[in-house]
Image 1 (cartoon, rainbow, N blue to C red):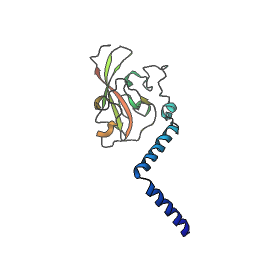
Image 2: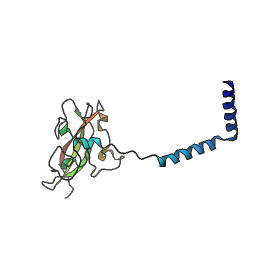
Image 3: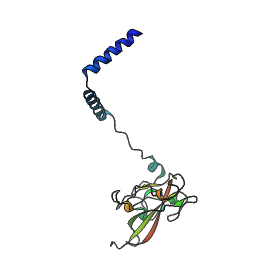
Image 4: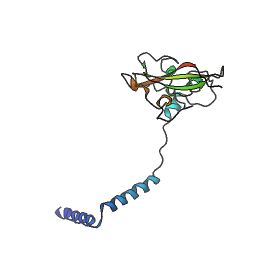
Length: 177
């Protein structure tokens, strides 16, 4: 077996003497970039939305509080507490409302007025996994934390584990409709 080791040692030394690190990195980079175009694009996992029927299809009543189309959920990103043992305005038993929230302005189809809505995450228990909604009406970039819905707002609580989200009307907006 010594001949085997000697053979590979000679070959390795020859390659090392004739190749620089930069050229080796360049070749590896070309290989990686080349394979990136060959690899298939992986599909998105949309199973939580498909399984639980919370997909917006435009055929549902905007007054049904267990559907994403409910008017108060226009900026909600998360699981509906109405499907998780709570209500529109109260967290399910065993969870606590988040200390910090995000705000949206939604139009009520019954009276045509815009309402200022506070979205509170309910924290302390693992996500319920039902009725997931991702509505982004009026969402702003992430640097404006008060109007950004892609944040775990349980970060201000003792437990930062997210469960579901409630929608609380704060008042009528000054926005004209």
